[in-house]
Image 1 (cartoon, rainbow, N blue to C red):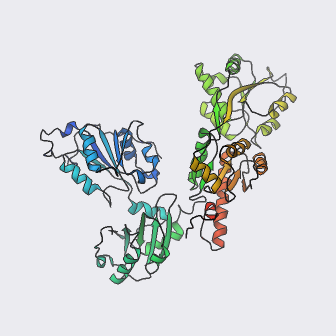
Image 2 (image 1 turned 180 degrees about the horizontal axis):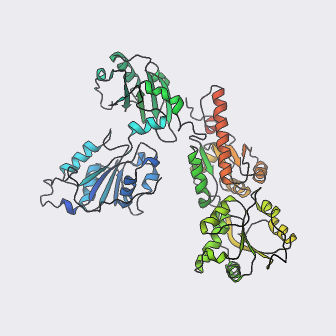
Image 3 (image 1 turned 30 degrees about the vertical axis):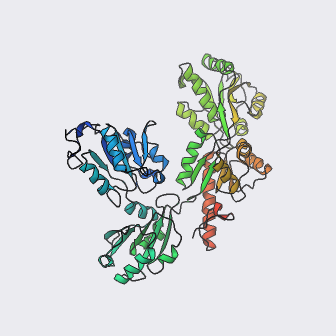
Length: 548
């Protein structure tokens, strides 16, 4: 999601001409300008990433948001202030709610699915607000008419088909003779329960029964499903598809084989468990979303300060006064702990001037760079304490004025690195920078999904995540794909009776996500070669809902 832009329209300015500026009989004093304002905002057809910058800005400023909770992704409401009033449109007339809030001087956002002006409520709700003299604005959104075909890989026009007609069949009574022209692309809305009737009507009106047709349900979401057929067979081919759905009729449907980009992502629709601390999971989850997955972050450990801060206080003092030649960071948590301690003392990255800094791997190095510290040493091979130890230089009294190394680490860190550095002539100060404790069990639905096969894959980024996840939630189901970051984690998983399906080529979270995506690609290819539908691993368990 792009950062929300700030609107240049200050709250309380007069409404634009034609935007509900009339004074109602209910407002005889003509005080509409003193009231709040209603923004009728389109939130797109499903993907929260399709929310416009203007819509996000309106949500940031809103005092009251009126929306159908059942059809609004939580990521959209995340743009709101914590103190915002959210009213479910199912609880009474949304226009009445909007009028009340606006007359109380509140800034109101009425969220509508798709684009307010196309198969939505702008005409009805906007007209009622105008009649009541309530100032309002319209913030267009991405319509399902264009958004869903785009995500399905079907252009509505091409060189040979240059006309698009939109048909809303929600209220019936459609004159299908008007849509019989073979050169026009039809986008048909609200026909989920009348597919057979629509297709028969078009054929009766003159469209050949061999005309290409496609139906997409849950468009632009990770539940999206598209079936390509003809007018003759579409009703039978789409039996059981869920709503909301949209039908596209015309030769442009033939582009789907070449332009399908969303449903062909390697992990499309896979629900992936990411058992890490929330801070560590963020970048990994973003990468998984880019592959089409739906990540579910479940903390397995909680990072807490050391029980006694004196060790870290002395370490920071020694870091500043020149006690150390090297500082070694073996995790992003260690970087965060030292950074926070420096901030407490009013210090910043300049405290590392004259020091040599080592990082155990890519992510730890990235955390240091973000702080303003460029590591002098990172392992070129295995990204672990052992890998760093193999590349550590021996102490040379002619080159190194000081032989001390600071290692701010977890309370449960291993001694392999310290033993190796000691062999090389270095004196190590092993300081507890943070403690790791087992997190609380996740909610019951998550635990049930883990044990019952509701997840398609789980990523283990360390041996501790294996132990802790099983300890707080139980073992993943046998259909769940198990992906691990390296050999040691694989060994631990196998000791707990898990089958390891995927292992990263190098021990980094990014490489682990990439390895899972490659596995997903092979999974899809093998099913396609066998002539089977692209079912997910979770759909392989007994009793799972089967997709066509």
